[in-house]
Image (cartoon, rainbow over all chains, first blue to last red; front, side, top):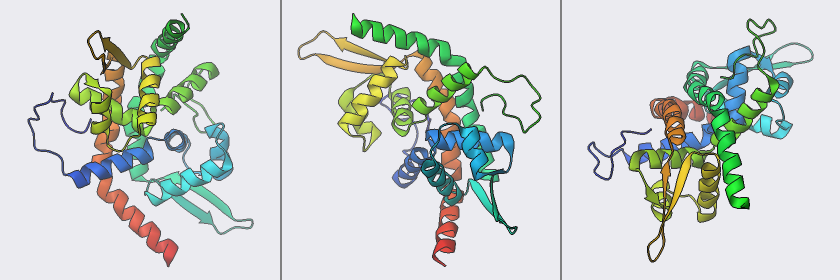
Length: 132
Length: 132
């Protein structure tokens, strides 16, 4: 949550609109399925090559993975290292900032694991109500 | 984090692949900019009409908001109430499950607020390096 959960009568000073716009932009960037999955894969496995990240991320296209890693590198979440060997070896690992985001997302993974049954029940009930 | 994809030497039992696929699917659904923003808006403001959610979410199209709210209703995150008045009044509020997800996302909002400067610096450095 941005600040408190005040109902209609805000009890605290409004957030700077510039900060709010930036936070929304950052949330828009990081609240992305592939960003979350790549963060998880790199947090659990350390430094990895592109192909290996793709294998562990399951179902990501090469184009989408390239784009995701490039944005994560630009945002300072990931470090891309080109090892000077032949053939060149390129590896990716999380920065401290990337690790801190992976940690922040932890609660969402935990929530997803804990809430699977309730979500499936809700979906079944919703679909039944719409069909009935 | 999902449980482990530990680095070559797993230290704990592997996750049931069915559970892992479901968790990834749920993460793909909820790790969505508009879902996160609508959760935040409803957590902070209580029950709201469609139009008001749109105003407070800033920049969401009517079509995208309709789709987001419908998926959230189907997943059991949101309750849609049609009040029997003339003209009919339709309102949305979070379920307990929705509140628990909003709470889990809290860490990500906090991270975004705390990390703005570092992200902006990283972007500037990245763009400068690419331009140079």
